[in-house]
Length: 258
Image (tube, rainbow, N blue to C red):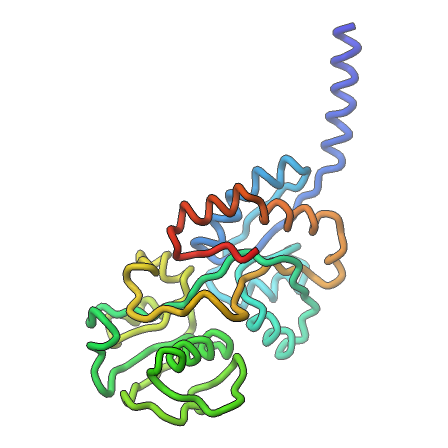
């Protein structure tokens, strides 16, 4: 009987192994990677083996996904993805929300935004969606005014009133923390802020309200969006365990978006 039971278990185990699916998921370093590490064992229990691939910028993960080098990525919000699809023709679709990273403005020279002087230098991300997001944050806080009807992708050219006479420089988002020694203030995406040792809750001198369209998401190729493993990936991410992990690990710097 025991031999028979062992044989039966062996057959079931073999069938389960054959049914497993392995995928590569692209992320940026920091919270996105840390959260996906927590998702891995949950997905593994459901037959989905995740290999995490880290990228240091925001451009390559979509290129790699579109080319088939990845099966999914988890690093961007929908306005950024929409802009990439228009600009580059990617056939990539969102399949589930992940987290929200309220963007912040940081300074090594000034303790508060009120102490930032006239003519101060400010670095912001140079991609249209994240740069525009910072300009909307500044408008929301009464720092400057943008022309009407700019939507979610305003540019520096859309500024119609700049009372502080801010000198705004646009640079690659990943490089913004490195400018803090040279500028009065820098707008830094949360994943790059935490990677640079900044505390988004305590260190930001201005911070975006956690609202609007900037929830991050999992994206896959359009041809894959209805495959069973996609549902498994999203369900493994959107669990109470992962929500608790996010709230405990990041203490308000990163917020669940589902």
